Image (cartoon, rainbow, N blue to C red):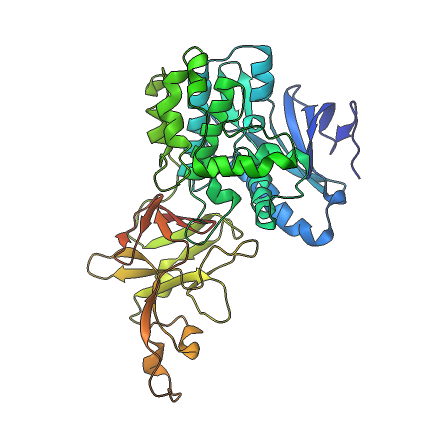
Length: 448
């Protein structure tokens, strides 16, 4: 157990000034470093976590630290990491302004500026193949009253997703605040709409801004478990008080943005952060909001790779050159399964949104480019499905039943998306920088 108090030193480097906050998995301290500067230190409370849950939790903790290394003015910066008494920690910048709710309770803030900064943070995440999934006032920190940054982009989103799969009833009261910002497709994922897309964050941004403008949540009170069904229903039906905006000076100018963000249908919701930015009333000039394009290899002269940017195998790389040997030009992608063989088997243990026959990559030898299509053309023969080879039947020596099992095109259950645009069997060419969304997995296309 790591029960650090003010005056204690963590890992011989970080002097505890005070405890900033505490959550289910971690404790955050205000600390001073040997350089005399002030930082925030997040400590993972592994001593309270069951042993079988620790490996995945540590992966998500590392993921949050690495997300803080993304070059961005609008994400909390990670500084360093380590372990103390067997418990992981990482150090990040300290934001003296506190979170958004703390800031609005003590002073008036420029919502156009703060809202734009939140959106720019989301844009930098999305460009790097990540979705925050837990945007709320407590996860927006202020460096100053005019400078906002995003935080908590690791553990919370994954845990919230697992929570919603178990159902909403019986959730501890401290989790209600998170439900308030979740879109319908995240609260109740169903076949066809369970892919995690940037539109998830866009919906949460709409809830956040409505709350900052009016002081209340858009879909009704959420003070107890009894309020949850009505709140969720109103969100699903798009029922929120638009007339209330007219009672607050300047708030009605936000109506077009709120309408676009709070659309319950993720397919007709505003699709990108850039779409939302154009609707921010009185937003700062673009020259003041730099766009940080991620740095990676864009040269495809030696082929392409797919890098896992979000998912249970974060950081893993699939080199597409490895799959086009011996005349093969077809690459199957799907959920890891012993029943269905895929060249790229995506690991998905905490959810079931990736189909076993999800999508197909096809190499066009003439143009030396790759096409991605939703679904797979496969034989219904169980033996053939166990192999990833598209030409397996030609090599198989087993006797087929009569009639022979047919070949057919199997579409994925939740769709395949390239840069948030759903594709079909016709497919699209992929290019460096494209983000492929398959269930909760995000793959970035890069040069080999």
